[in-house]
Image 1 (cartoon, one colour):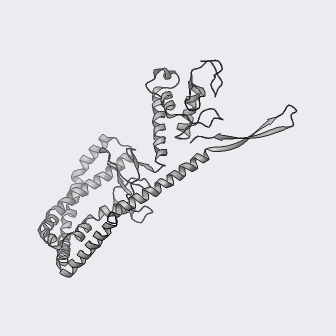
Image 2 (cartoon, rainbow, N blue to C red; image 1 turned 90 degrees about the horizontal axis):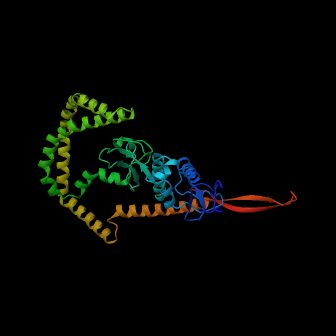
Image 3 (cartoon, one colour; image 1 turned 180 degrees about the horizontal axis):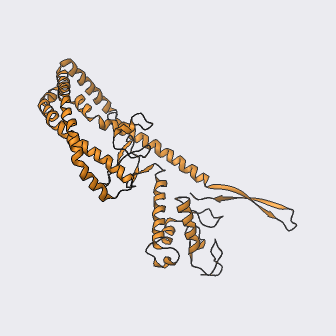
Length: 344
């Protein structure tokens, strides 16, 4: 390395230096590692500028990857491999957050990243070893819809659409088909209703116990043993609730049968046909896919907002300051206004 190319930060010559590809400045390994550690760990920035104070250029991603390369043993004398892996992981995470405009959430349990799905506020982690449900609005874990009752957190329209699948079945199925399903529905309510309560109630109780023990820091083995010991007790306690579910058999079966009969009435059937024709006419204008239309419209508006926010971030990176240069007489000075770029 030539003598006239010192580190732009510490001005040292006899040190290992790298050349930044975007601005061409040379910086020593120790200075750039300290620079990256500060901006990644302390400031949590995705875009990091050159260590030279007056340089507005950012450090290229390939330069960051090269300096933090975990497989480069020559860097071990400057920073341990485990620390380089950590910094590289954090930097990539910050870059992902920045790319999505900050509209991301972590699973409260396994910390998996999720982007926003329009209309869905009751989210379940897809990790098969986690499957944690949580609220998108407050990012708090929740196992039931009670979290959304009487709170600032509300269910999205897509959540309501999924929950009301039984009402959709009753509303859009022909009355004669509903009558055909009467024996199957009655049998299901009478036999499988109590069985469902007998299985689902202990399962939900054990999930609550598991979450409480995890928050208390208990080991997986302790959680498993506790669940095995408590399961018979909870199962016996669920028997009265299972038997009590039979009390709902007669009113629910009667209500289903009444809906099927009403839908077979010609006048009501004609009204359903009119609604069907209206929906078909709406489909000609692209209004049948209302969920898709709402989602695409929201995503377009959100993307526009993100672009505006990133443009503001670009402008906020530029700050001006004034330097004063005094002449030899010690009295006359010249003010020079320069522009410095801070890092995102």
